Amino acid sequence: MALAHAILAALVDAPCSGYDLAKRFDGSVGFFWSASHQQIYRELSKLEDQGWVGCETILQAGRPDKKLYRVTDLGEQQLKEWIAQPCQPTPTKDDLLVKIFAGHVATNQTILAELEHHQKAHLEKLSTYKDLEQRQFPNSQELSESAKYKYLTLLNGISYETHWLAWCEHVIQLLNQKIEKL
Image 1 (cartoon, rainbow, N blue to C red):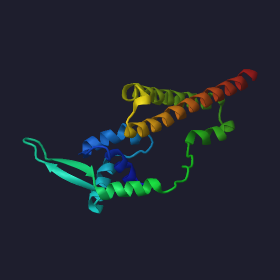
Image 2 (image 1 turned 90 degrees about the vertical axis):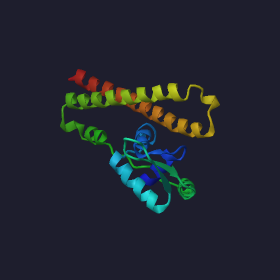
Image 3 (image 1 turned 60 degrees about the vertical axis):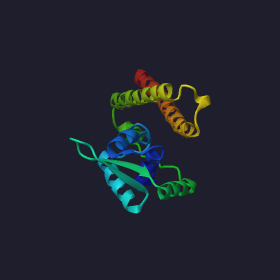
Image 4 (image 1 turned 45 degrees about the vertical axis):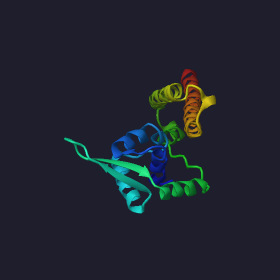
């Protein structure tokens, strides 16, 4: 996937400024596609050059003018075409798994400390996802079509974090058993 498609996905529901788009991106698509605000601004410029997004300048008294971006018909068509193309599963690149794979060259305490660090981060992410679920999707049976698809991505995040935490707990138990046997 290109950043362009992630931006179109974040912008397709409603026009917004580049600043607001970067914030919207962080709280939605950014959970599974990372990009810096600088990358988003650069890509917005390219998308405008391609005609995939349009920009309206709003004059503001005493403040810099505001650019309001929206997905054009051409941009929406590009997004539809991209969605229709099959994609391959993303290969896993995870430093922690490489560390565990070669963990026998380190102490169990070193690996356990790294696992506990990751466990804390995944617990925080799961908490964020659960909070989003409660605030934005309190009744999952009555969602609009657009909200339903957003909710499905959130369910993936919740499932991923829940599975990761279960795996982490199992690994910590196995490593602690090894320590007790020594």
